[in-house]
Length: 282
Image (cartoon, rainbow, N blue to C red; front, top):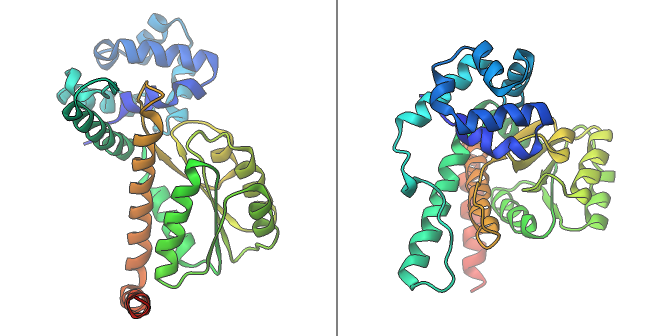
């Protein structure tokens, strides 16, 4: 069933243009009324034009207003009580509350990501990476951890893969890329200048470009030809970087298995060779 309308709205709202943001805020605050209304009525109630509603749907990667309504209706049909929302992490509570809150937020972040992650874009990314001569992964700060995880996985199945964790490393890699290669930029905010510059340089040199960012319009996704999105809607600064990281790692696992199954027997042999090599060194 199509769902994720409300998640997509809330995740993208900060990156929308002012009139689209106004419409999105109205829809997020009045989902039941929107489900039972025409595009003309929603535009009137939100005090925007019908064209703005249509542009909003496109910004959310939906085919139109009808798909938005169907997704919101599916969201409303699920249990929507307070226990389903992100938990605020209380630093002075008992350890049991800490365990419950962090675990709940991590699981919720993965569930929300599944509503904004395009299977079509995943297929494109898997195909591009499977056929690449060389893969360069760009990530700074917390995103560097995600980049290194992907590199470790791809190296185990014998892909030529390098990580650029700072501007010098990234631009050096990007400068030597061509149409046989893939540049993969990771930035949850989608605003990391080093990643934007490096992806742009790799693209100029003919490399296929892929992004992994939070859902919505952002500069990193704007540079990339293939966009993978995650969603994490925590409000607390204490929890934001944790659940989003789990969502990103889940996408990395999906990519890795998708690539590995392309030539399963060859990749299994490569895994076995690296496993034996590591074991023999211990």
